[in-house]
Structures are given as C-alpha cells and as structure tokens.
Length: 306
Image 1 (cartoon, one colour):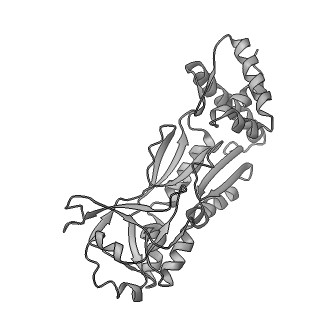
Image 2: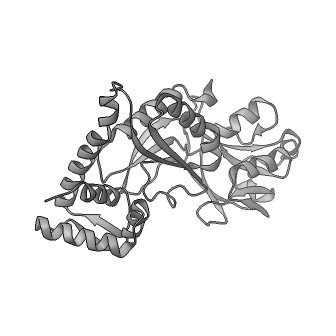
C-alpha cells in the first residue's frame, strides 16, 4: 500500500538531482531516504530510480509514479481552500532561484505581488550568482540566456540583447576602436560567472535592417578588473574604469540616463533571452503555472522596452 509520505518522498525525488538534495527537502538524512525508496520499490515490485555519477534518474515507472504523486498531493493540499470557500486559492510551496541582479530588480517584485494575491502559498526566492548550481529542489529557475542542459525545459519570458558599454568620457578615448579585435587595446571589465575568469564574446556585424550581415567574430574579453556580480561591473563602467558587456535589462536604464553609451553599436552580440527553466521530471504544477502566467504578464512588454 502507498502512503502519503511515499508520495511526498517521490515528489522530492522528482524535484532533486540527488538523494542528498531530496533528503534536505524532506528534513531527513540521505540514508533514511535511501531506505524509504528501497522499501517503496519492494512493495511495488518495480525499480523506480537509478543512481548514477550525475545523480539520481527516474525509470519509466518512477516517472509515472511521480506524475500521480504530484497530482494527488496538489489535490490534497488544495482541500483547505476548497473547504473554506476559496477555490481560486493556491497552496503549497514554490521555490524560485534567480540571478542576483535580475532577481532583485524584477523577480522580487513579482514574488511580492504573488504573495499579496495568494497568501496561502509559501514562496521561497533564492538569489545566486550561479542559479543552476543552486537549483536543487527548485520549481522554477530564472536564466539569462538559453541553456543546453537536457534536464530543464525553457519557457521564454522576454527578449534581452547584450551591449558593449562605457561611460561617455571613457568612450571618447576609444578613437582606435573600429573592430571587436581592437578591444585588446583597452581595459575591459569582466563579469566572471561559473568560476570563469575570462569572457568569450561572439560578434556579428549588423546590416541596414539590424540583422546580422557578416561572419561571426569571436574574441576574448579580458582585463585587470573582474567580478562575479553584475551590479559591481556596471558601477565600475559608470565610474569610467573600462568597457563592459552587459545585458540590455540592466544597461538600457543607464544608457537612457546618459551614464553609459554603447560601444561598437554596429556589431551585435548573441542575445540572452530571459527564460524560466522547469525540471523535466514532473509536469507543470498549479504553482508553476501561476508563476509562469504572472511572469509572462509582467514581461509583456519587457520593462526595459517601456
């Protein structure tokens, strides 16, 4: 016989990449989770999960059980709102992971508004300079740019170009800067992400219609100043310490205020759209659907295009 605790165990496994991560969600030890999983498999007579070098993966039987567990638990967790006469209320827990700067500027206000509209929904917003590293157990991960990881499904939220920028005084000194390869002559400010100390940029020359009209040029942008925080990089650029590559969502306001100007505007960088990533291991829950719908409304149009 399957019990509710078994369903909760399996939902945690579906939201995690390892038994240890699932154990943290359940406030249990990893050995306890292992034993409970083994007992559940024995009762059902099927293999539900496989442990590998990259963590835990669910078998086909495990995927089916996960879908049943999510649907059942959502119905149970919605009982209080249905009984109280508030059928539109969403309950349970929603864990969102987002980058520091973008999370503070755009996701935190979105969470605030969701909380006001759904007081029974517990929302946890985790900000990280490497969101996928902190993604264990997350219902939604906000990504700046597409990712190739097969364990996540991307949902497009908003467009986001990438610009080279410098403050006006610094830009006036860039008399010899006509091609991306000339960047080596000037001080560049590097946003160090995922423990990388250099940034590789791929440029395409824009045609008259604004679209790419030449073969891509890839250069390595490096300098004596680097940080893993985008806000720090932006502050340094405004202070005239060098050229930075920055997402449109952050740079557009500084350009509009005259604190930064674009450098090499006739060259385009690969865009980095704003994406909401969801685990492929389980279907879309009512909480995830609620967040996605709210996010798509908030970013239509994108705030940096208004």
